[in-house]
Amino acid sequence: MGNNYSQLLEKKQAKLEKLYGILEDTKGKIKALESEINTIKLTQDAEQFGAFKKDLAAKNYNVDAILSAIRDGRIDLSAYSTRQPAQTHQSFSQTPPQQNLGFMESMES
Image (cartoon, rainbow, N blue to C red):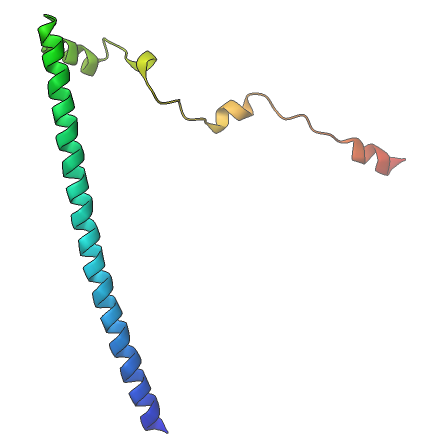
């Protein structure tokens, strides 16, 4: 009977090792695909930024001075953001919730 357990353990261990191999292979494929996606996004961003810089330069704007002012915080672009500011818990805690304690009054009577 002990032999059956040994064989069963060997089979299960072999299957586990095979699955670990598949998992590691899959992780490698995921990382490679993520890297490709990031490269595509960076290339797209670079092309869009290049077109933006050319457009500004064509309008006789000093692109380097504008970018420097944005980096230094002298130009605030937050008014042009397309993203909504994240809600924080502080915004909810500024007005405390009204508590209905009427049930306590009914218990006292």
